[in-house]
Image (tube, rainbow, N blue to C red; front, side, top):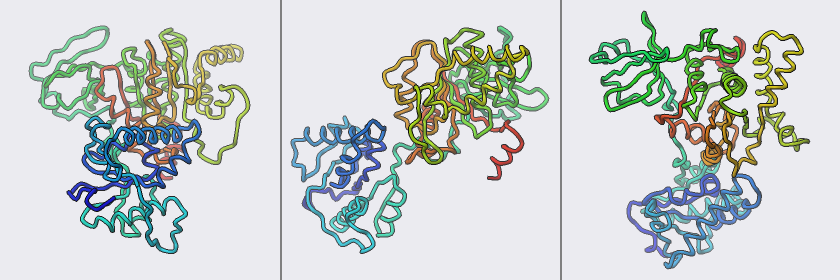
Length: 468
């Protein structure tokens, strides 16, 4: 690879660490007009990680296949770099360079070159020395690798392309408070009518273009209002008042909404027109309880769905306890403590029937709830099911897509999670699959999202969440 082969314009040269390709194989096409350099050690590490059925192994194999397609489909000399314009269908216009020569560079004695990470750092140092006029940047998901690079005076950065949001404070909450002068500025020419115990308002004004379909609106004061946006057409929106699930007559399996956001959540969970619901919130905000209550009511009373299917990512918080005995359901049981706890609460609200009645109700409920592992989801289709994905913050966007596309006709999918509790390596609040779907599904007619704010578990749990 000669000096003239690498372009000396202002385009950057990004050196990819292995974990970037294993996190997102399509990262090869995500650097637009800039060039990419893949060290031999990155290929070695991909090769070492390609065996197995894990998501990481699948990504390693996909990254290798993509590179094979790029290299084998290129008539150009590999030394001069392979243009990515054709393979990426115009997504990337830079070049892919593979390490085609042995690189010798003196690393500090404390960094043994036998270690893969340090070998990649040596390549970055070599390129930085060879092309002083050009920005050479290491891209890695590994924080320590980036720290080592900066300690050696090299440029390093995280892989940002998979991040939906830089700041999760900007994440769509699903609700907003209307300003006090809302009716003054939007009341001109307002239409209002009643239909099936709901009140509808068609209003026009400056706030209308900002509102999203299925966004919840509230206003406190003398005439409190809770409504949601049903249609948006330019500067006019159609608002519909909510069902008040805080009232005992509207209880869902004996559960009533304890705060405003829980009421919003129940309106989403109980509405047959909403196919996809995401509920975010810290521990104790009622995500699982509300969802199970809504699921049981619609499975056993309304007969809208045939059964509840519950799944979650099995990422242990502490040390793994090894293989578990039994069937798929029995293996998943230790992960489903949250389900059992909530069923105990819901079974206590099912009315007075004595011990016999409660035991019969428990058996009936249990027969309609299936616990499934994520490992066996590929290729399945769920028809007329109420699908609950718990701990969804631990899913990558690709895994989330795999799960949501399982939904067949008449199926409702509910994702629950807390993006402050991510246990999966290399996933952050900004790149979690849960953040991804909240952002991508907002403003769709058949989906809704609510961020639950207030904990309702106990005063101890609420205080712990604040101070610990």
